[in-house]
Length: 414
Image 1 (spheres, rainbow, N blue to C red):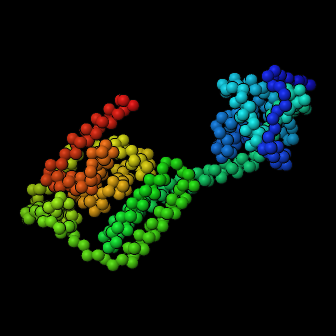
Image 2: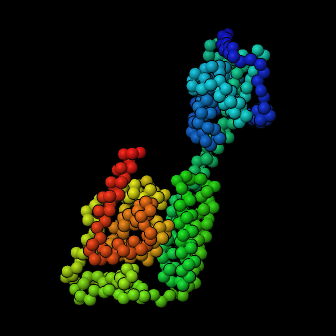
């Protein structure tokens, strides 16, 4: 028969017992032991501490207390007592004695440990042999961990299911955002209620921005419901709308500049006010101007997705992955246009004239310059870019090199 005595000279007086500690103790002692082993308890504890309502340091402290027990302590109805001193806990975690007391009280009130005080306020154990079961002991009773083992597993599984649902809703919000953008484009062409459509589009962009990077169900559930309602409203508008006569050549409030050369590869309408209309492309073999329309406004600048994400950080929330490919990035930029005040009409025209990825880069340039307060009208600037590209004078590479230099300077100083 062996004895283990842990004397803490700083521990004096009677421990303060709170009503929460008494209630938690009564609830735990009403539960049977689970028979879970020491290893199983540790695994359940560290799998997902947040699911158990524990802070990281609280779970670390519980793990430390469990590590000072023996496997036999968790068998059958054996006593599961840890007699470690407060001083040892202070040294292990590098904290003050008052912090140790606060942590222990918190664990006791949460029902994860029960304080078993001896008559002289000392913590000690008496075992049946060196590695036998505890015959008598005082300190931290860890049996609630065994009694609540099934609850721990259930809470961890519920937490994981909640996380899975959060991830699903996070992706669902992205899908709905793209659906709203596509439906708004159709609604603008088929309905006469343009203000309502634009309001829905703006509302959709705002809701998508609220999803953030977290997978919080309390935020995502109502958000997705609102976005689904917007989709249903748009679909109803489109299904019940009479087709609106639209001039495929664009606006009629200014003269059209149309290339009448019979060898032209593409006819694109641009109003005198600098507003590009919807382009009608007709392929004609042997065009002398084909190279002008095929030439990229990037002029060799490598504006890859990673560069654009650095240029416009807001795009990260609109992409469904951390490393988006070009197609995914283009879709994210299309959703960004609404918040910048760029109409879907201008966006489609830019894609038709410049190319989809080049148009996305142009919008990113506009967004970056807007954040610096250098853009009065994002939609007007995009239309000006379209016109300059048609004239063969748009050189986005110069602006991109300047923005890249600014990014490099910001990294240097931060």
